[in-house]
Amino acid sequence: MDRRALLGLKTQPLRTGGGGAAASQATYLRLPTITANVRRPGGRPGVMTVETGVDTPDAALRTRVAQSAPRLRAAYAAVVQQSANALLPGTPPDVERLVAQLQAATNTVMGRAGARLLIGTVMVV
Image (cartoon, rainbow, N blue to C red):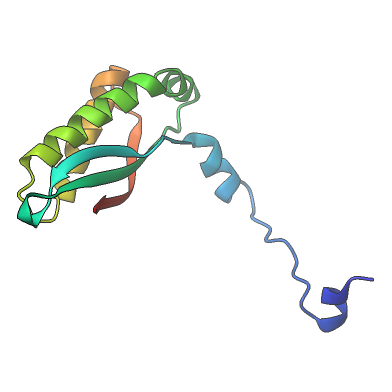
């Protein structure tokens, strides 16, 4: 016996028409979190973390993005470390500048535009 149905708590799965979340998941590639060392106030060491992913609607370019994931991670790590080195202790990172630099690194690695960088959390701890 399904107790949720008896109590009226059973939910129906959400149905999307013609694509929706399933289509966006097919075009999105999540990359591992990028980390870099920073100096916190008082000279203590800290860590800057950036969550990244790439959305690529073009199927051919999406395959190339998946194959180039190690190169993208290396380019992103270099950009995040440069941003962390320029960060003054106690100041928040300039996320808009960081996104622009990461998108430029994406375009450079891929050799052309078309792969859109998506950024998650930027955190300094």
